[in-house]
Image (cartoon, rainbow, N blue to C red; front, side, top):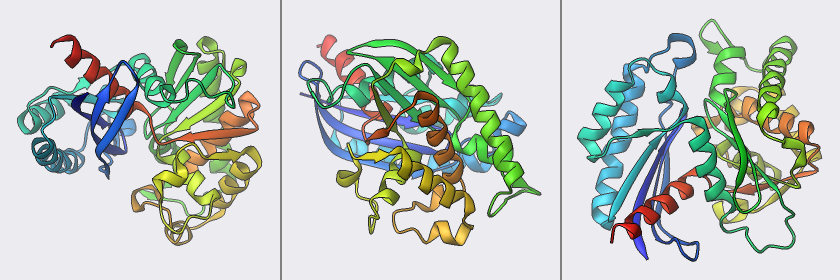
Amino acid sequence: MTRVAAVDCGTNSIRLLVADVDPATGQLVDLDRRMTIVRLGQGVDKTGRLAPEALERTFAACRDYAAIIRELGAERLRFVATSASRDASNRDDFVRGVVEILGVEPEVITGDEEAELSFTGATRELTGRDDLAKPYLVVDIGGGSTEFVVGDDAVRAGRSVNIGCVRMTERHLVRDGKVTDPPTPDQITAMRADIEAALDLAEETVPLREARTLVGLAGSVTTVSAIAQNLPAYDTEAIHHSRVSYDRVREITESLLRSTHAERAAIPSMHPGRVDVIGAGALVLLSIMERVGASEVVVSEHDILDGIAFKAAEVAEAGK
């Protein structure tokens, strides 16, 4: 097995996985997996630039991760950056800071590359399960964008569209610099229309309705699962490969969109960094389920981060 480190830097969070990986068998053993909410994409949709305070939060997390990577002795590190850094005019500042701290240049990947990595991470361990019909539709609801990938054992088609939970919140649920709590019916209607238009775009290239199993990734989906299970705290093992029905997703989404900041923050499994954006993220999930006619979503804790680790191990093995 090869010990690798994978970093996924998105719009809302930056995550680290250090793992021993065997690309031939698909085995991946976690040594350290963690997430830090840094909100790198703060204001990017409006300004087109990464805010100085957002960059500093991200660099602070990178310094913490660098210490862990050194301690565990990873043979190879791959750092992937997604939606926010693709969109920013000052992304060179971001790249320079990451190189200084971690010694590798972040790969600012395309939406298509992001989709393929998400599919690999989410489905590698599902192969052979006869209770989950193929093809899979993997949806990764991030902060700035959502990736859609349809495939069996390999990707058939993928598309990234700009309907992440942070982007939708900033675009539709903020007034006078503050998130509306709870959002107004007009705000929800406008957000829903934006999501539906993005789903139309995704469906131009990805056959969403051909999928037999919907697999949902990332914090909005895992948090909905935690709420559905009434977990007393966030529990990765209970969430991974849980199934949440359409009716339960609809109930939770409607409740979140009716609630105040204080009410959402009081949910035991809610990460503080998701309190303001979870309503938008849940609505994206609900809209997808309605579009594809999914009766349930299979929730995966394994996603683009695991895909990055698998690919890093493959490269390391090839170089030996």
